[in-house]
Image 1 (cartoon, rainbow, N blue to C red):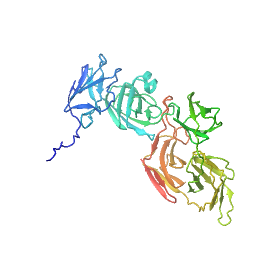
Image 2 (cartoon, one colour):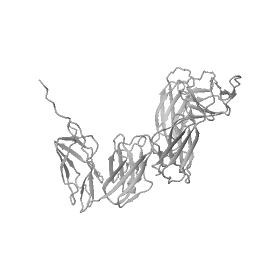
Image 3 (tube, one colour):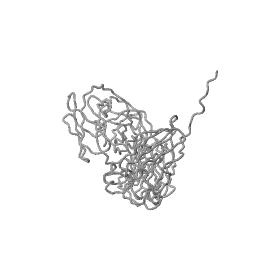
Image 4 (cartoon, rainbow, N blue to C red):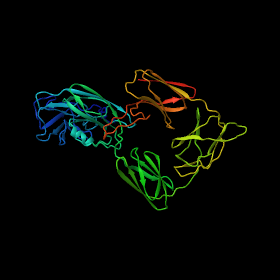
Length: 492
């Protein structure tokens, strides 16, 4: 006995046999749109179905075997208007769920159909993926003034960072694009990248737009998480970087950076309360948390990274500097071990301390009271000599441009992935080759910034102020710098 095979797996999507009305029809005002397929179909997902220009009432869709019927609200179509119905990735076959993919379906209530094409390219300045894009055009300054929640004239969805839309009406439009990660058709400003144009643009012929996706600075500020990190301290993280003030009779507050707060307890209450006030938005958020007991422990430095002017001391946890006077000492002679204090040092990240010295280093001491760990409240109880030879000089990074840059105040930035140490070179419009010299060994990212405000950092955009982010171009791959080596990079 041999079992009968079910045949090869169906990998073909449904095919559209006919539509009613026909695609590209004119002088019509249909009450329904009927699509007939070559096989039984179903809905691929629960994404809403809509016409462009947008109607105020959602469309109803009914699937009957090989047919889909879309009902239009009564008297909803405007005269002399070209409508497009995006049926891409809405339907699928019933068994294998192969998506039906095709360009939008067009019809016009007037004697002609609009035919302008708008192309766009998105440049992502965030680390977040762009996979559920919503592209909105507003033809009313009043609607756009309501922000992302205003009613757009056109709304398109897609996943491509380069795309084009056809059949658009001439006019003057505002643009708002956002990545609708949770597919709720609402701009969730805490998490979703967006893009705008500084001013409206006039669409009277085929047009191309370059848009930069960013996380808006003026998105709402709130407490994201809070937790005990030891018996004496609470870590509060915020939804974005901002200024803040902590108001509480239970804790002292110290900023770890501009998007997280370390609170040290004043009391031994079982329940701790604190309010965080944000001057920028004139809002506040509160925490209420019960005390947890934690065990203290000790730890040692994780390692030392040689640099040209000294060394970088790396810890296995976030550290808070205590009494640093004479806390880090070094000897330049191995035989006498005469230790001298290091007076030039700075924290370049929560886990890395950079020390600068003028002599060769052969041995190193760290006092047991120099640092305290924020993670675990462990005091560094450690005192030992390092046998540490003179570090090699760093490497050189050479960057050349295929084409000159066109924006003012440009600068090049390389940033260490671990220590976050950052180096800048101002762009010279008469030169196309740049050298970063004596760069400590490690892995870096390379950015090219239009530093409009000349603060030697990248500044994001603002929806409220309608300010675009500073143009930022990232090299896709990381760069490995090695001591006494020259690394060459070309930027398009």
